[in-house]
Image (cartoon, rainbow, N blue to C red; front, side, top):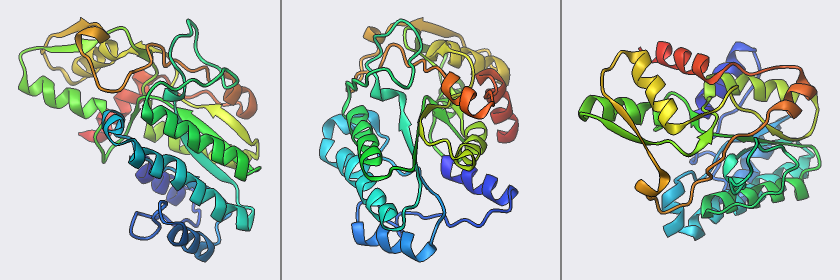
Length: 270
């Protein structure tokens, strides 16, 4: 999802870019990704590859760590050879969700799931191996060309008489179309560090689902339920809200609100 938007923004900005899929640069194969990076001679590496199957990661932790930790190590070692800056995409799952307010970048990480732990391990490799780095934590990512919450809700709303959606997990839906330009803007700034970049505002999965159904004009009722009523293999943070103020202070940009992002996503979808 994000890779497609990054390519579109690069084209819009008339930037030279090289996009790798697994066949061209497998991050779990050190020689493969090293060759791909050295051959392309990049001025920046945006590392958006990840194992993102949150529940499946609980069943196959070795694979999650292989991709998110070792794969990231491989990217950073290749970048290190050329002193190339790395921009690494991370997640709200590095936090345990117990804070009563939005998380700041300097709050202690305490991931509870295999996915969150493996992504945080990736963060640690980036910090250790690449002095010139950007770590960007995002939440509830949605974009065209991949499975995401919006598409799931639209599918289920057309199939079922009613939807039951968790109403005690809070966060910021974030849209790839809004995020991708900010990643280039951050990289251009040279303001290395760790940032939270999400669409503005907070909601719950229930509130998000309600707005999706409302905007497309469906009449399917959406009912709130608790996390306990919808158990999943991987624990979810109750609070995934992240403060964007460090990014706003460093770059001077405010992301669009999540409802605005959702409207634009749906317009592009039709």
